[in-house]
Image (cartoon, rainbow, N blue to C red; front, side, top):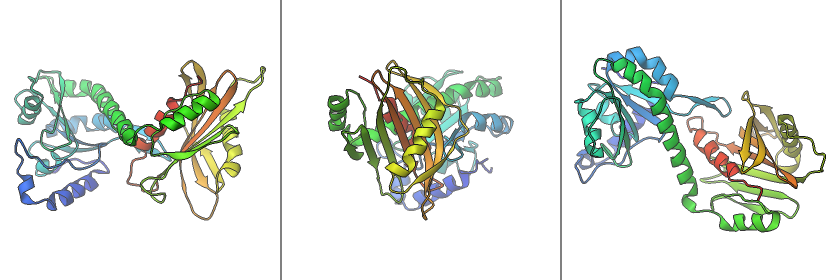
Length: 346
């Protein structure tokens, strides 16, 4: 049988075959004590299920699991590849990092996940286990109700989508702080300005006496990825006007030619502003797409915020440069959000 594929699935299968082909044959013999490492990215989802059910629920499954986020365009947060239990490519795809199995009690793959999790697969349950077919893998069993397979598949999708998104967020944030937290940055900001901010050691930059803070992460190399955060403290008067999205865009436009080596132009993203509460302080977030105005056509998404503290407004411009069209920007925007979310006035 031929698996049904999303736009990214052919690339998923090519990557799996390449990775498997270079492993020594002995590594492909999966035993209880030695399994090969899982392949692929954490946002690639292998969905295994009955082919007739998939034909009925394909569109709904894509809609729920391939939700989009605006970066420089609408981008899938996850990419789904479907394969039936009897599919010729099943053995390859079971080696992936994220495997979702839809099936009833007694289905061999459902039972394999339950055995690894040391649970009994109950109809309507969503169960997970690690390292079922490969090391570093998370396998999820969605146990369908006999006689109501389509309805129970459909009703489980929102919970499954929320579960994998929460876990992906945790993965992205854990990976960001592998280098540890920059405690010197946090301590200096607290001593100099009385505010709090958490960032990983992998960021570098400076804290000025003029209310400017610059943070930047060029790893693995600037040509491949840049994460930049510019922060400015602006004192306020007693009769200062309330924050509004236009004021944030105006601030962002004002720093483009002053704060960056190459001036940036930008367009507003087609998303609504977010109104936040950061430890009791009112904040507004807007998003857009920046582009260098020099000869090199660099660009990417940005997140701009304003936070109203008792004595000042703090403005933030966090932007990402990640030109590889195959690389997901979602993970790195989550990481920038986490740093911005950590800000507190006191």
